[in-house]
Amino acid sequence: MIIHCLQHVPFEHPGYVADWASAREHSMRVIKLYQDEPLPSPDDADLLVVMGGPMSVHDESVYPWLGPEKRLIENRLAKGKFTLGICLGSQLVAEALGATVYRNRCKEIGWFPVTVNRQADTSGLFAQLPPQFTPFHWHGETYDLPAGTIHLASSEACAIQAFEHPSALGIQFHLEITPTGVADLVSACASDIGSGPYEQPVSQLPGSASRYEENHAWFAMILDGIANRVTANAR
Image (cartoon, rainbow, N blue to C red):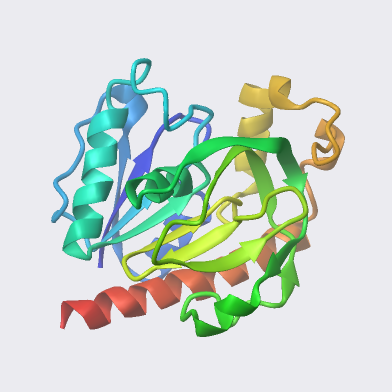
């Protein structure tokens, strides 16, 4: 399988996605939009992974690659080519599907539990996840549930934590995160952290080794499900 990954900033990198792709012998290329690397065409990859970033989907005047990136996602969705959106990436996918993206009632930064919704029983991607798990979060915006999607998960801070479309998965949280990824986020964005009810202090953000192991095991299940769907659709 050929995977392309769109990276918006140097401190939000593919993390475990790259480890999973290597272990499964998939070909993966990272396109660094912050270095003005050119976007691929919609048909160049079997799977497009869209990473997070501190910018908003509405910041097209600040980031000239944002408009073409949106069109790439829209074109892939129209062609039935699978796209995985993480955090900002999920917001871009949601907007491409016609949903409104807006500031959440509060920020969510740190390790907070997510509850899998009953609708996820019809999902091939979240079916093996536990009823509740604790991933890493770092976001301040959210979106309405896009039409034609399954609402997969929610948290106390954010009603729409994950959704599934026949050609896309959007997740607000960071199952891909590694200890290095958390350290990089803290180094670049510690000023984001205030005193809100869902903003953990920097001292709590590194988490334990078991947290990362659990997150990566769950993400492997999801990514394997995506790979199986991509393979089946290609036949």
